[in-house]
Figure 1 (cartoon, rainbow, N blue to C red):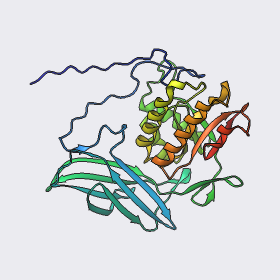
Figure 2 (cartoon, rainbow, N blue to C red):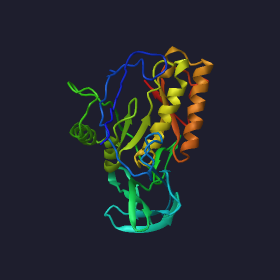
Figure 3 (cartoon, rainbow, N blue to C red):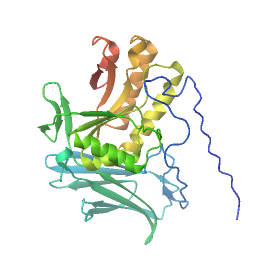
Length: 322
């Protein structure tokens, strides 16, 4: 057998091009989430597209029905290989199938809604890569059918009904553990958040563990997900904000709980008029709309930032930290 050397290098040294560098929470070094060695055949669902699970599910409500568009990402697909799609309800019963290429469209009649804390119902989509009758590779993802909007008079509206958002901002930090939370720590956080009656969580101020996004889907929390473009704008950090946003959206696109993508947090502490700062936000805002037409963008402005500043009019929704 051949021998391979696998080298994993991490570097948490200060720099001026990777966010975050300045904020009021602790930055830890090293690896603090699972690392997996994944073996796949030559033809497989993509493992290298910004960390996506290889499947993108877009449910859009049309009256009582849900139109579900599914797209997959494949590497080295051969001409004799077919992609088989299966939609399943929460009980695991197959409610629709399709065989074809990289895209499939379904309609769920009288869809069971993902309805917040009351009824966080989740469907799933399983996709298999077939060569004849043999399943070469497969992926699956859960998703929820729901509609939502933000109205300046009525607030947040979920599935046509006003839905008050009361909740917390959550950091991934534990005494003696730092960022290296285990599943039981995520579960305990979720239990505490639900115990106080929260309906929403702002996941501050970075990408959280997939396990916690899954818990948010299952428990019906409405989620604000954001990148750590925070506190201090760095002219050399633009490409990093773009790559982090691409990763945030591709990895978390299917989560029913997420309703807004956060562009930045309190980034105007040092002033709101920097043209490079404003341009960076416009680029991120356009990127979010291009990658995901179903969710609005938001940003958290620090309370000293005037409501007449150009920057606070870039995102679809605005929030103030006070």
